[in-house]
Image (cartoon, rainbow, N blue to C red; front, side):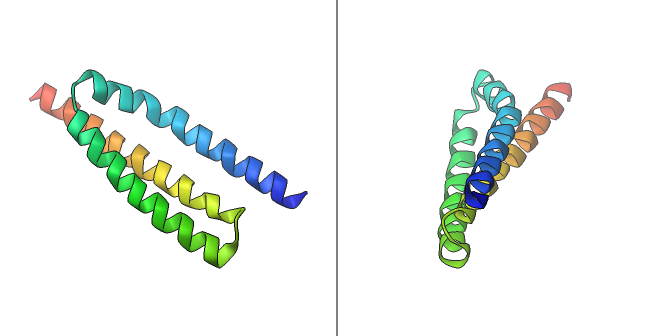
Length: 92
């Protein structure tokens, strides 16, 4: 039962991070920043893959979902920075 609660909690965290980052990604899409978004996705994929595999071997399957959380946080941070830089460029 503990693992079920853990997995549900991690899934909820993943969805919360996605809910925050999605508007930022849509804004970048609307600005035509597709190449930048592709780079963000690639960086996130590498982080997610390495973190998930590492956690799988070290902590087991339930906690390996933390790698997905980490990848989502990478997208969130990079999208936030890209939007902030875009806004600065528009004001200059």
